[in-house]
Image 1 (cartoon, helix red, strand yellow):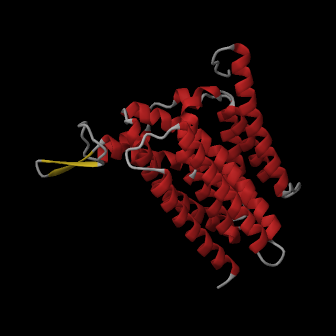
Image 2: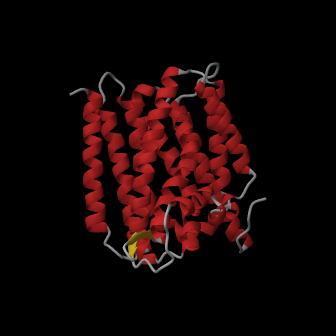
Image 3: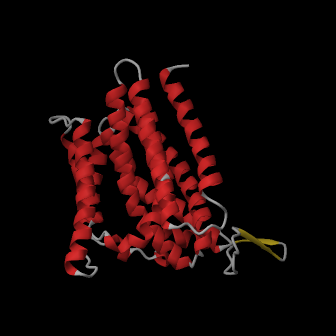
Length: 319
C-alpha cells in the first residue's frame, strides 16, 4: 500500500472511530447540548484534527511531511474559519422552522453528513479542473476577490431570509411536506402517503446551503493546496472542519451577536487568498504566510468584535 493509500486508510478509520465515540459517549438522542458539553466536543474535534496533522508531519515520506502538515493545518484553519459563517445562517434556519432544542444535534448531524457528500463531489471536480486547466486558478482568484469585497460591505446574517431562499423554494416544490409536529421524526405517514416533516426540510436545507459556502471555501483551499495530486490533504482538512461544525454550533449560538466583525475578518482572508492566486505566477507566498494571515485576520476580527461590544455596551452592526 502506497503512502497516500495508507493516509486514506488512517483518515477513514479515525473518522469512523471518532463519530462512534462522539455519538456514543459525547452525544445522546434528544439530549439538549450544554455549553460545557459543546466545549468538550469542540476540543475533541480540534484535538483530533491537530493529531492528524502531527501524523502527517511524521508519516509522509520523501521529506514532504513538514510542508504537507503545514498545508493541512492552513487548509483546516481556513475551512474552520469559513465554517463559522455557516453557523450564523444555521441559527436563522433553526429559528425559522421552530426546531426544538432537543432535536438540534440529530438534525445538525444529518445535515452535516449531507454537506460532506457535496464537499467530496466539489473537491473531486475542482481537482480535475485544476489538473486539466491551469487558468482555472485565475478564475478562482477573481471569484474570491469579488466575494471578499461583497462580503466586507454586507451583513449576511440580516440579509438571509429562509422563506425567500432558493433552497427553501426548491424543497417546497419537490417535497411533499407537512406542518404537523414532527416529534423527532423526519417523515410521517398519513392515509398511506409519506410526508416530510420540517426536520427533514431543515436537514436538506443545511446540505444545500452548504453548497453556497463550498463555492467560496473549495476554491480558497486550492490556493493553499494547489497540487491536485494532494487531494487527501484537501479532503481531510475539509471533513475535519465540517464535522466540528455541530459542536461549534452549540458553542457559538449564544454568542452569535458578539462577533459582529467576524464577517469582515473572513472577507479579508478571501481577498488575500484571491489576490494570492492572481499573482502567484510572479510572486510566490509560502504556505506558512497564508497560515499566519488566516490566524491573524480571524483572531483579530473576533477580538475586535468582543472589544467593540464591551466598549460600547451594546451590539452594533458594522457599516
